[in-house]
Image (tube, rainbow, N blue to C red):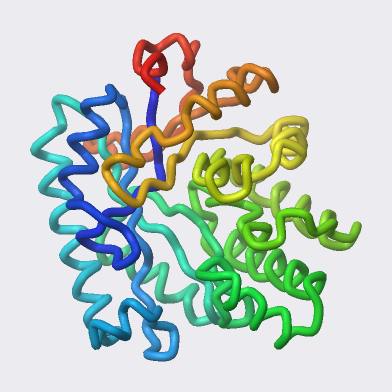
Length: 296
């Protein structure tokens, strides 16, 4: 089997490209069996808009309307291609401030979303993965890189505890602009605590291949993956695509990592039962033997 549960399109994300249907068609072309659609939770404050959104004179209400349109289009594609690929409609979270928790719950309920990718892109309201400059601003505001990492995992814990997202998105994304930073034992223990909380309620941890392009390894690191597996956690795959050509991106590197670390017994995928309206995680049988992997 080949799949991804973390995707974006230029139709509904300003820093991506391509139409959502092109994403789906590409996934079918490379013989994905399952595809999770997960556009970003709309940000609700003008101060949280990114530069490309500000240039387009967008308002938070525009992002909200865009998300509504995303769900409508996702449902159309889900029905149109149901005989060719199993599509799940979800959302990638934001945690900018505590009230995001209520907003996430409201959106999941309003749109009957099948799953959530639980991600953190801000620390104390400041973006940490948008640019190196914005990360440095966060460091200056909080004092040290260590404090930024500590705050990241503290706010990630709040998200995980309050929302219980079905997929934990790029667990250590905080390292994107500081890949060589050596976190203290305090930071490591905070990360491990988050992992254990997520394992307890049954989350899947994505092995996100976008990290190979950004910092030469997946999110999370192999060391963290080993801890997840040794603690009884379940893994899944995500390409975090931002264009149709990103579908299956770096899955050749992923296959190498899976083989090297003997991860196949720990790989799971999500399946949604429409009739019962239930979501379940299922183990992937001999995932790398699927013919789709031969083209990555």
